[in-house]
Picture 1 (tube, helix red, strand yellow):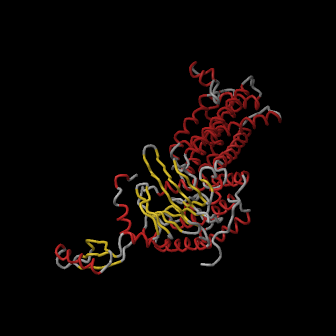
Picture 2 (cartoon, rainbow over the protein chains, first blue to last red):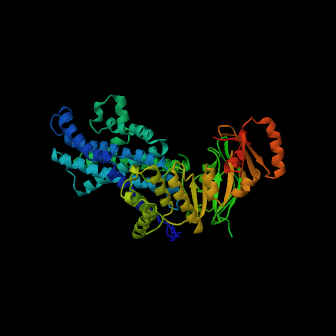
Picture 3 (cartoon, rainbow over the protein chains, first blue to last red):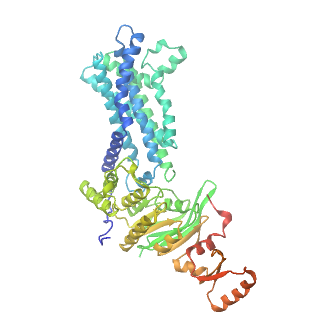
Length: 265
Length: 294
């Protein structure tokens, strides 16, 4: 062994922003190396677009314009699937010794979670771009002007952020990665019980009530209205309100659970 | 001089289960301190409290002069923890792990890179630097884990059962490293189940059992507590069947042998040896059985 010191003295620590950037970089690396999740983020949108346009489309809307109806639904469905892996990522971190190391460093350790959230946002915006790209190839004809596109992008981003945080909170609360994956399944069902794939007035009355009063429907109607010019009414406000409410609940619930679980694995 | 770690009347219970019932310890700066005890004695809980992961129920703790409750940030700046399970990111490579920790500790990108290379060399991981940790063996993981703890030097290093699951060669290498750190002035607080480890490394040892410190002192002092020499009796197959602590004086041993001649079987042989840490351990932890915690 050499006589050099084993470790140089160091008393400073990474700033909040620097630590945040490190954790985002870490989670993006994780995303790129998790081949299954990445393939799903890319292939799922393509397959769902083709499935709903060519297999179900003809039956659901014989006029051939179903693709115009279904694009917002598929964006949300993909975002739901794409963000669900956040629950597993977070739960895996929380059950590994590495979280103890982060917690005992003089940094904001909650940044581990925001790193995963940011990576999920990036993955799902990519998936959204693919949905729209494939949609355009198979006959999607958006009527949106620049501002409407911007509004739709904002709505989609807010929705992904909300869903990802909900999954992150599930990952924090769940005891194991497998449990996190199981609990998350319930959320993935929501888009089917909305106006994503069929109009709600085709459903039985009781189901109609559920579909019209759950958060996915206003988000779908808002995106659809912005992209294809259908009436939006008060749906945009409802959508933003729902998302912000759920986002705050998820962040508060997740942060509480993060602190509570210190030292327990 | 401020002690590196000062613990007074520390208590912790999880629900109804008392894990630590009144711990008092002093660890002088720059020394190696070993907390020795069986599984479930409260070793890991104590490490978790000292490293800010778990809040104590009662008592006061000062780490490098910072109060554990009021000065958490100061404590975090002064410590580094290597837990019982390798705390490394399996998806990243060894090099990426070290660079990430360097960046989180406030090093610049180039400083972190240089530091990572140096540590990989020192811990014999250069060949595996660009492989994902997922593919590492247990020993490699442990070495990386310790390397990560040393990315920047903190005055106090906590090691929770650092050599559990290591082969003899890696264990020796790690011991050398720990001794080297202490020479440089780092205070090392480690837990172990291995008496030999405490004996070889530690300036002071505390024995914990059932959430209480049942003895503390240097290895020599602890051994002295159970007498000077141990009389070992072996049967025909050369297996030890009885160990008797003695004061070591000729008179006492003669009296002992006079008694033994009548009770031991024909052909028994005797051997007089210095007490081992095992003797100390058995003698000290056997008594307070009723309060053992899981």
